[in-house]
Image (tube, rainbow, N blue to C red; front, side, top):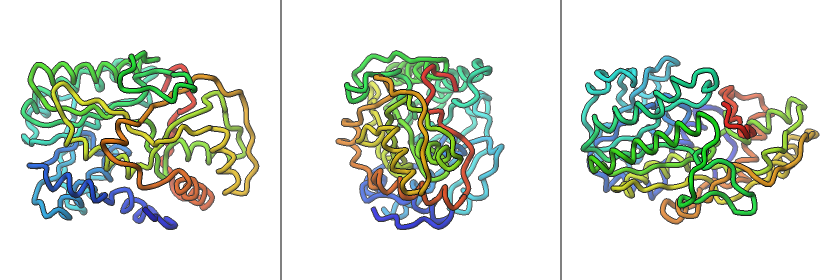
Length: 342
């Protein structure tokens, strides 16, 4: 996929929401409306737009509905692209019960940043809410977002955690995410809800992501920490496409899939390549550990297809975007956190 030079946010969001031929074909076969819970987050708006665009390209008439509190705005923008919106506090049981019944649900709601010091709300969002959602949408097909954090650190030499590996989460955020998965699995089995669990490891675009975090440190002449010496990442548009295709694989018990790029990236190498593109010096601190938060994405890539945007393309775009001082979200990934604190 040739993404050229991305000039501004409208072009960026258009690219992030561009459906692949596989997504168009998949949503062309999917019956019924799609409801996205937690649509106002970093990925939700472009995922919703991709669902809308893919449905139209497939000639399918359906509602795409985004649900969130919209406390930070974004509702009018979604509506302008043909997405219906519903304001809802998802921890309000009656409000959730009043949502429309739809056959296809994407669960993107959750809490990560701000967990430290607010652990109770994190557990409520990440483990109590899934129970409400499963009871409400007991007759739906659900794609539930999760995270590679549920595995904990793995040896760099292993090539990353696989879906069959035991989960050993570190920190309350990761533990609550495993709790979210277990609650979804329980209701999938007991209520026979077809479900996919989408273990995403670092989606990246130009306003946030691991590559942006590293580029910002280089631009600010701050050292890049090497302790988390390796990581995975994936263009957010590809993550959106893979998530929507997961409706095809929803099953009882749940289909669990790691989603990230195919490469195991070196923090040192990525920083060096970014610095070269930015014509900036790069400083390092720390030493690479022999363990890192890494996912093996072989199953996901085999089922859901290869990324359309390469790491080299991402590095070009991120370096250019940061150098031009374009807007960022100010939401660092904390990819270098090794103790599970966020």
